[in-house]
Length: 159
Image 1 (cartoon, helix red, strand yellow):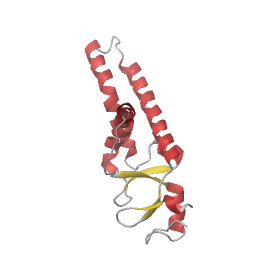
Image 2 (cartoon, helix red, strand yellow):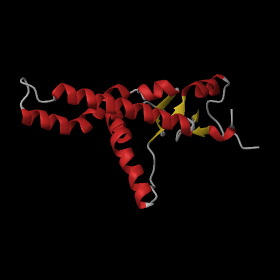
Image 3 (tube, helix red, strand yellow):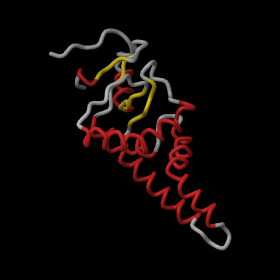
Image 4 (cartoon, rainbow, N blue to C red):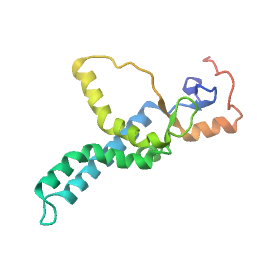
């Protein structure tokens, strides 16, 4: 296991950071699920004899925000469909704990705000800076790290 992939949470517990491609693919899977769910929602609430046109239009405009919040309810343990496919988990960087009740907010950020941020950076050429509160871990490699007895302590140095 590459030493540069081993990081430490704020409480000193070590973990193996998920790779960039794994995080990108997890996001892509979640974004595709988001788009599919919006498509299903549009079909379900499209104006029919049972749904008023104005109500249907309001529900359709609410879908881009409501869908990730509902999908995020399944994300409270840090493992949405994208994370299950890639073997990653979204955790709090403070202590490695599950994101819990902030799962819906995290999914909203992943599916709605992240694409807007990427577009803003690409179009505006700007740089996004800030402190992350959550990060992705490689579940299998972190388990192996713990099984090998490297739970806490100084981080390994690069050779």
